[in-house]
Image (spheres, rainbow, N blue to C red):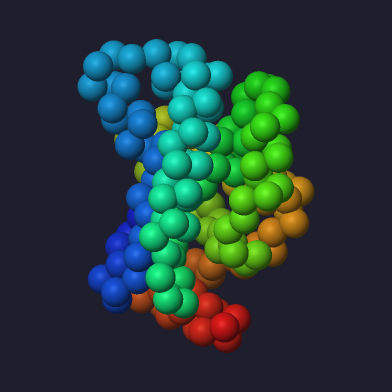
Length: 171
């Protein structure tokens, strides 16, 4: 019902969707009892999340053809936000990359929705932490001069239409 379901709906409609790097990283590290987990080694987790997000962005930008939008399920700014949330210093090279490597000026953001919020083996944040993270995400993206577009709390189909209508108007 949330962000992943929305991205799946956009993918079904033929749009390119780049999966969330952080969730995949957590799954990989859980499988091998690794340290790069948000509840074990926050700095290592942040570093790998940033690196993988940057690699994903770079790969997509090199392969990008045409004017069809590409939707990322999170990005390297999320690693910067995570650092801020956990009190880890954001390295200068991260700041420079965040200032120079840009996603679209408009970034879609989905507000917390208590009725559909769920935790699982990778997402262990409670509701209050999720709301705090959302507010910190707004702060992070705005600090890098992104225009945030809040996606309304409605059906997946209506949310997908909202996004597609917006990107069509922006062309």
